[in-house]
Amino acid sequence: MTKRDVFQAIADPTRRAIIALIALQAMTPNAIAENFHTTRQAVSKHLRILSECELVQSEQKGREIYYRLEIEKMKEIDEWLEQYRKIWESRFEQLDVLLTELKEQDNKEKMK
Amino acid sequence: MTKRDVFQAIADPTRRAIIALIALQAMTPNAIAENFHTTRQAVSKHLRILSECELVQSEQKGREIYYRLEIEKMKEIDEWLEQYRKIWESRFEQLDVLLTELKEQDNKEKMK
DNA sequence: GTCAAGCGCAACTGAAAGGTTTCGCAAATT
DNA sequence: AATTTGCGAAACCTTTCAGTTGCGCTTGAC
Image (cartoon, rainbow over all chains, first blue to last red; front, side, top):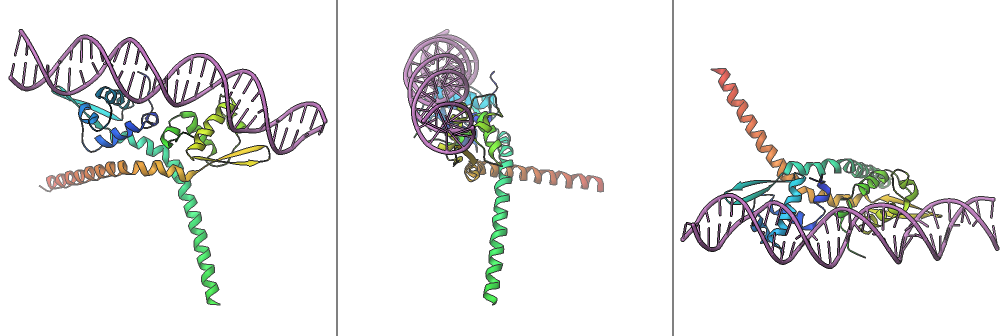
C-alpha cells in the first residue's frame, strides 16, 4: 500500500543478498531462507517489500511461489546514477587532458 | 562510529536531494537547509551520515563549513550495479538476435 | 478424508531513524 | 569586551523497521 522506493529497498543488506540470489534464477522463500540465518517469514517480509517497489515478481507453481528479479527496475538506479557518472567522467577527461599536456611538455623537454 | 553504508545513505530522499545540491559546488549547512523545509540541524544530521560513509567531505572556511560531494564514492554504487547491468545487457543482445532473425524471416517471406 | 508442506498475514518487540529543541563553542562583527 | 553568526552535539519524541512467534489458508501426498 505504502509507496515503496527502490533506494529504500536496496538499503538493507539482506535484501541486496536476496536480489543477488534470485538474479539468475527464480527461487522460493524457503530456498532463499536456507541461504541466510533468518526464518522464512523474515525473507517473506523482504520479498513483500521488494514486490511493492516492483523489483521482484512472483509466480505460483502448485503450492510453491517462485520469486524472480525484475531486472528492468534496476535500471532506475542506473538512471539516477547517470547524472553523477557524467560528472566523474568529465573529471576523468579533464585529468586525461592534463596528463596528456604534461606528457607533451615532458617530450619537449627531452627534445631539447 | 557505526559503520555506515552507502546504500543506506542514499535511501533517504532528503539525502539524495542534498547530494544533488552539492554535486556541482560545495555548500554550507545553512545554505543547504534553505532549499528544504527542514531545520539546519536536520540537514546537519544528514551531513553527518553522509560523512560517515565518506560520501561527503567538509572543509572549514572561517566559521563556515563547506560540504562537498565525494564523487568517487558514488562509483561504489556503480560497481554494485555492474553485475546487474551485465544481465540486462545480455538479455538485450538476446532480444536483438531474436529481432534480427525475425527480420530475416520476414525478408524471405517477401522474396517469395 | 487426513496429514504434511509451503505460504502469507497479523501481532508483538527491540532497535534504529528522522525530526525538533536546547545548549555550548568558535569565528566574525560591532 | 560584548554580541551575533554558523555550526555540531546531546536529549528527547515519534515513527518506522527488521525480526520472531503464532495462526490460518491452500496445495500436494498418503
